[in-house]
Image 1 (tube, each protein chain N blue to C red):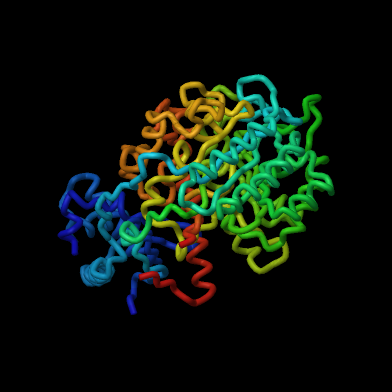
Image 2 (spheres, one colour; image 1 turned 60 degrees about the vertical axis):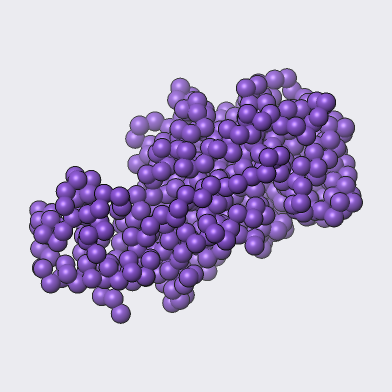
Length: 491
Length: 46
């Protein structure tokens, strides 16, 4: 078995992630997606193999034992042989040290199939959130509202470009989209009819800060089965510091009762964003690396679908992460994982978005390689009808894909489409070597561009956070399976 | 029964290179700022 590992073509570090989380030693076989629990000796053997490979030394039992002895582990020859034997059996089964599939790249038709759009119905906002990538709603331009003609053209655009796909997605985004609620109503009505005329359906979602979420609007969203992402950062002082009104007052007291009221209407929301769902989404920054306390605060409010994400900020921003934050953030994920476990089946249990990993129904390798589809499957539309690869690129002239008012609005700028299509993980040098590559898909294009000015170089702090979240998520998956006494076999 | 290793999930992700790629899945957002759904926690609709 060790002959494989002496072969420089197979890197254990890249293809088997072994780590300690909580009371478990875990090995994640990256290429097969299999998961194993190890005893401590086996964990140390795998780490020794990694170390020998990294030092370009021969991987054999003698070398492993030497390294283990240096660290105080006096594993006997017999015990090591036993462990190597078990590792070999798993290799034979294809669940450990499995090889990476041959590189099969996603193939696309020449003309992009756009199946989802983000309609920026309002480039204005009733809050002045300090970390807003939309520069408090205006996206670097003037404050403006989308009109009905542009909105309808946007719906026609996705119905046209979705080709043979029957299911399209339209997200109402801003700024604050509820500032243009009349347009939303008109476009839902128009969209449902226009889709039905073509034997298609549209799934609508809305991303809102909750300020205008009155009874009438809540009732409408329920009636129309519109999925909703609501913004709340957590504890009052944390939320108010970053999400004030224009006069500086915090918005926590205004939005929290409305968000709670709405969340209570959808107690069975899918943690995988299926069907009609809600999610409460927050952002954590340098000011609250103990964001686990914010998640728990929301769970204590009775909100059970929670997503809290790291801020993406210019290094000079006061709220940008600083040296030393990463360790605190990782500790917060660890604490949150344990609390998540202890609340399972109890009052105030919650789903935390980044801990949801659908190992048994997860996406195929092709999807994992290609990521979000921004710039060719997904397009954002500004109030003026300009087209961009995603909502985070709106207003960036270099990334403008076209316009709904161009002579041929369905013609997207080929060069940009091509650059996004080819920004998959095989084109990203750091991703090629990373064990988390098939769960992360190379990260967010906008964050990568913002930090590295390139679609194929990655935002490395984001990588570290992604890896930590995944470690905890896999650990929780194992705990859940152990609890059910039912190992998963997906082969 | 193995003494040192317990397999919890036996999977064969690589095989989906041949079976996947239909493109019917819901749109994901790697920064999760829109749909709150990244590839890592998406489900296959096939």
